[in-house]
Length: 357
Image (tube, rainbow, N blue to C red):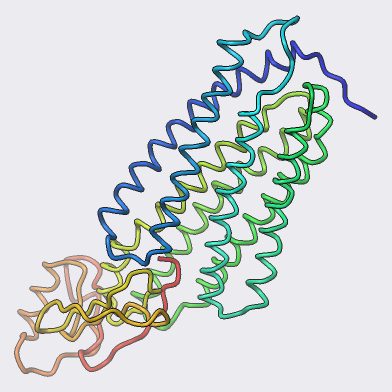
């Protein structure tokens, strides 16, 4: 049964929610711009494709915001929504769908690539890529059909495509986040310090993945429950901006994660930059660029590592910092300064893969 809609009522509701969506997406664009600037300032030696990825994502965000503003200008200034006014959709409105689809597929394919580098499973990566590309194909189909619509009634008739797109987007998001969480959980080792870092990465992955998944589900529910309005568009647009913010936040978090990784001992991080950095007893040293399949290694050759400087001084006072043999572990109850960082002797190291940084 075809869905009929009053154009005046459609625009009355749609303009309100899209104005709210414009305010939110503009705010998120400011966040992503700040993150992009911070990224280029903090990671000047990152691999070129990562730099291009960040630039492309920011470009998609900027283009979408311009199209969003142009759409609202058309409705509110040029056409002035009236019951007898024009009911056609401006091309800028349809172009936003294509812009968002390009941003989402770029980010999802990057996450798929990271899953492949972590799991080394071509089958798993191929299955995820099929879902991601299927989502992109649906978005392109909806874009073409939207361009060909003549009025609001035809646009509402595309509800089935909207439902399919929102469903596949939510499924792809949940699959990517869930796979990363599982792979991270399987990376746990016997080192308590390493496990704490991995747990933090798992929690971070869940939080960022949950945020985008929730908005994808909101868009799906809105298009099913309220098919005669464009409320779902607001959730779809905001969700796309959250994709960008989450990706940039993940890339910018690597510096702090490497600092925490140093405290563990020897930690291997996926190589996103073109240099290998080692901290040894003689100080910091930068080596020549390594092949692409080599990871950045952060090493400690200085014995025990502590989170608290006071605990470190107490340890040195009790056991000495010279040639004495250092114990392999420290009892937490031996200090009144709080929790000791689990310690290993200088001759003992652990390798911990930290994939999501």
